[in-house]
Length: 180
Ligand code: IMP
Ligand code: MG
Image 1: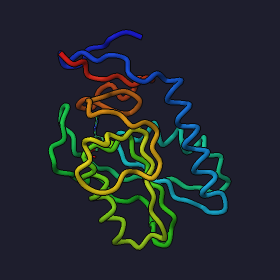
Image 2 (image 1 turned 135 degrees about the horizontal axis):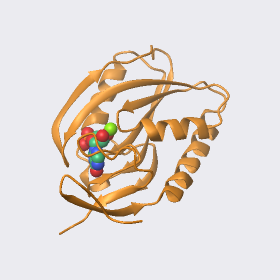
Image 3 (image 1 turned 180 degrees about the horizontal axis):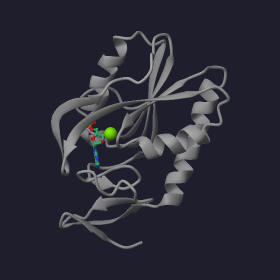
Image 4 (image 1 turned 120 degrees about the horizontal axis):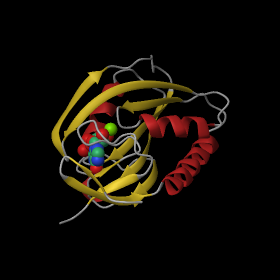
């Protein structure tokens, strides 16, 4: 794997697709174990989580499971704006449902906190969160996700759904911004 460049910034290989697939399958097994007798609603946070959600949803092997979507935006360039915009509302009723929020990455935790507030208005039966990536040092609000693929330091990363101003989501591997 080689370095790549976006918007004049250099990114180096960070997590390979094989390693991502391994963790996605581990998370899927944990979720299957916890929700086997239920019909959870996976709630994918667009845009970043769509690739992870699709792999995780298929890998869970649950007989009864549904997926819905909601869209938030907080990042511009390589940093959080500190403000979370909801760009698309819930596509499905979550009242009385066991909801599993599917996130690509938890950074400051602001998006997750805002989402939980929004979900609570609709009285779900339970809410848990799975995030492929988690930056513990960056967390300023809320709790760590219930299921975590990788804990990483506070670096900017992209690929496998994660973007730089809309680009690089289609990279099968994850790359990290190179420190100068
Ligand atoms: P938070 O609200 O600060 O926790 O940020 C959450 C959202 O910001 C994530 O769902 C991502 O969409 C985006 N984000 C956070 N860190 C990164 C990163 O390193 N690369 C790309 N997007 C990120
Ligand atoms: Mg996101």
